[in-house]
Image 1 (tube, rainbow, N blue to C red):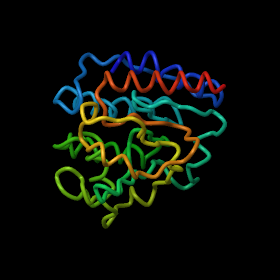
Image 2: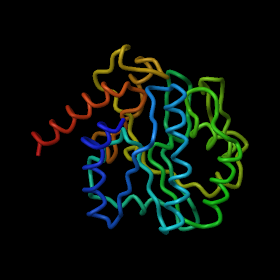
Image 3: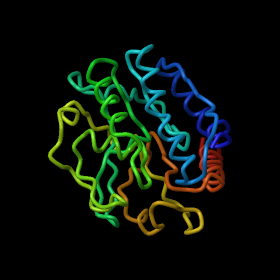
Length: 231
């Protein structure tokens, strides 16, 4: 994933950071994996430790997965964090899988006891089986109904106080990339599951989720080339 991050994602993060006063911290992990193998799941879990460290230094932390492109810098994402909330996430809707769940690929957190308690609960739950080592643990802490072992039929559950402290970002802040996917490029979810996901015309953040690393790099390059040509 490092070429994906370094060549495509990081420059977009840095442009956004300059506009809105963020510092950018990118960490080269000692090991990474491919798709949803064990090493990739360990890399995903590092998100929790890195966020905890960020919240010890900053009042606000915005996590962006390495396969996210920030395409617009005309809006401060913090404006969507309710004054009484400690975090904000986008709800991912997948009609093909009858699934609705928070997606932690873009994750805004406000430092304080609530954020610390959530990260404590996630770490206590530990990496979850299946495709979502970290996100599955977050859903558990929120009291979300996680559906089956593949998260099909995931939906709001009984909830916990952590859910009460959650704001919801507009869907364009974590929009799945859906164009031109092939079966060979995808894992976790079928190509057909991307066909009818909600989309906005000009997303702030485009997420190349569920793709092989080589496919991510190719598609992210193509999107960036189109953005440059289009001005």
